[in-house]
Amino acid sequence: MKICVIGTGYVGLTTGAVLADLGHELYCVDKNKLIIEKLIEGEIPIYEPGLKELIVRNKKRGLLHFSTDIQRVIKECPILYITVGTPTKEDGSQNLTAINEVIDTLVQTITSHKTIIIKSTVLPGTNEWIHQTLIEKGIDSRMFDVVSNPEFLREGNAVFDMMNPDKIVVGGKSPQSIKIIQTLYEKLQAPYIITSLTGAEMIKYANNALLATKISFINEIARICDAYNVEVTHIAKALGTDNRIGPYFLNAGLGYGGSCFPKDIRALEYAAKRRNVNPEMLRAVQNVNDSQIDLYIDKLTNQLTNLDGKKITVWGLAFKPDTDDIRESRSLLLIEKLLERGTEVHAYDPIVNSFEPAITIHHDMYEAIKGADALIIATEWNQFKTVDWKKVNELMKGNILVDGRNIIDPKVVRKHQLQYIGVARQ
Ligand code: UDX
Image (cartoon, rainbow, N blue to C red; front, side, top):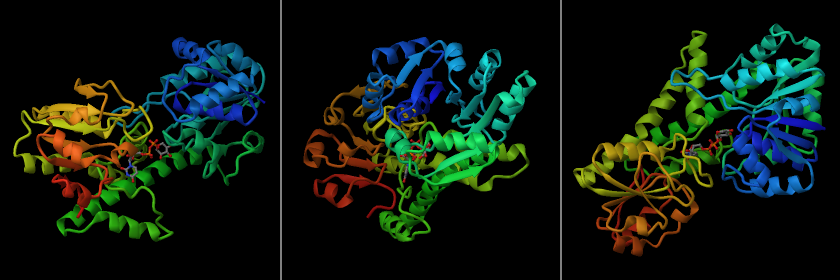
């Protein structure tokens, strides 16, 4: 089947590459000519394990194409995926400029039936609004179907997650449009959740909100454990054995960041308030996450008395391992707060090598800690789990290690005369 993917960001690019790998004929378009030119030359704008290989392989097979000629491609493809950005504003509402542009292009272009599959994360009610807007702008309702098919991939695992989904969520108005999705994904093994357009939108937000809730929950439990000298990883392990809870997203630390959780929780809070629902839990989840960084800074300040003029090294800038994405990274907030307190910040990340605000970025993790008063681990990259602690102690001026991701055994670093700071670690 000839498929067009509009928007070559994270989700669009992965969707295009995976669908091509499943045997479909894919045309990825974007109004950003530079990105498309790079993709044509084989340059991938994001770091995502396995994605480049998938793109190269399917380009060679003649199944994956990139183009800026959006109108021509739309005309030729009966199936259109919309994967453009829908940034959340400060108040939680969404900037739908990119969606509006796509709608206008569709209105000018549609001459044959299109199945319009929305993968962009949009507030409840937006897919219905898209359907209505297309009709109001003159498209006959028999000429298109709008389908909501949210994506649950994790950055760093995008290709695997899309090839091995836990579930396929489809919201639609007609049985035919849902059948089309089932045909597209017939090679994937996953249960289908079939619902309304708005139901599918809600599933995406509820899914992310529940995962974020687990993180803030364990972070609050960790604060209480700290007060009673209890090891929080034991609690998380025990909770994880209960099938009703599950072992994932119970890792206490600096909290959640990234391009999805923070903006999606804000957006869901906004959606609730817009219909006069008071989202008390969503607020609490965000409050815990917002204050988590201060918790670590306060502990550090207690040890160093004053952060002014101190040299502090941060290991990890990406919002999580295996990505170069620093959007709403916890390191960003952490570093801003350290700089506000007059700290000289040095950093190392296996992939990220530029950062705002300006700090000294090193290309070697040990080089970064030379003469440092304290070291903070902010991202759980694998290479921070197997560290030469003797060398760390020799290179640093001070001896404080802040484990912001609970990946280090306190007993091991203490053997090397380092002082371990964490939350609820014994
Ligand atoms: C998330 C969802 O997992 C995914 O389903 C959705 O499609 C997009 O949003 P992603 O943003 O890639 O994916 O990251 P994820 O792996 O979920 O981690 C989010 C944040 O939570 C990271 O900052 C991570 O460090 C943090 N986290 C995760 C914790 O602090 N503790 C945990 O136990 C798990």
